[in-house]
Image 1 (cartoon, rainbow, N blue to C red):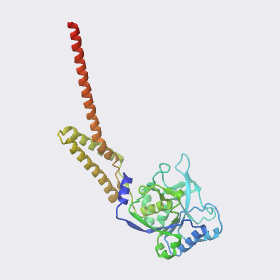
Image 2: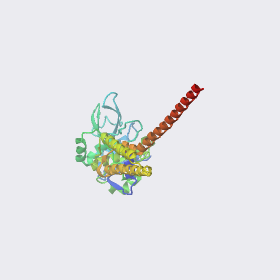
Image 3: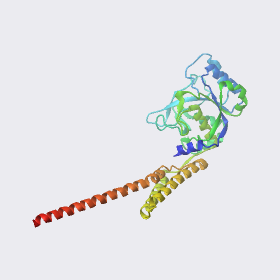
Image 4: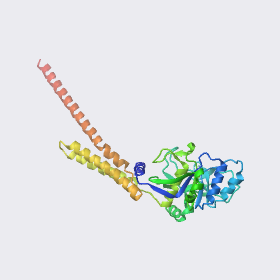
Length: 341
């Protein structure tokens, strides 16, 4: 249901430009092109620079790359982890080739929280406990550079993940060739470098089926900075509401005898479904409350169908009962005639 609400909200004409985060698409740029871009970005005074690129292997002219990274004092580099079997801890798996050589660099974990493999990304992680200590997620580490208080409030909530707000947001996106002419757009911003069209880094979200990892990080950063905390209503409320509406619908179904009962009940059914979706959407968009009305909508949609089946079974039972009674009466008459003969 929350995915549905997100899609509806994202299709509205109302859009907000996120002016705190700028995405730089590296495209097919070489390592030297990226180093040039980092050198230029360092001159523009960004709040933080996130490099969502794992330089796993050494290459040519690596000294220039490392110097370009050092030129950005608030740079966050990526680490990949894998969960230790039977534990909530992780071990570092993917890291830049200079990880052990440059202790002053800061790192964030780029792994995305997933309940099933290749599932929909709805949440962002906050911290990861690893064999080398606790690391923040890539998104949270960057958000903290701009607004430490927002991250403090996030951690005070005591949750392991947050729900990402995807809807109605646009980002400034530049490629490597556009940086120089748009240098003013980078000042006091969080600049995130990554590949927007990398096929191996595409993920499903509630709004789109193919979204790059760097774009997911950007949405998570904005969610943290906005202080958008989604509150989940306990599932029991959905169960109770579904049961109450089911009882009321059945009460009308069996208690209201009229030639217009069918059409009246269908109208009531349509109104209730609309209200359930509309109220859930309003709570989600206006108040950041996730009220999962799945069972409520299902019981409204199929409640009358179940009642129709019940009535149909009753009617079939009555027909069969009458036929059996007639058959028994015929048998008795036949036996009486045989005795008389």
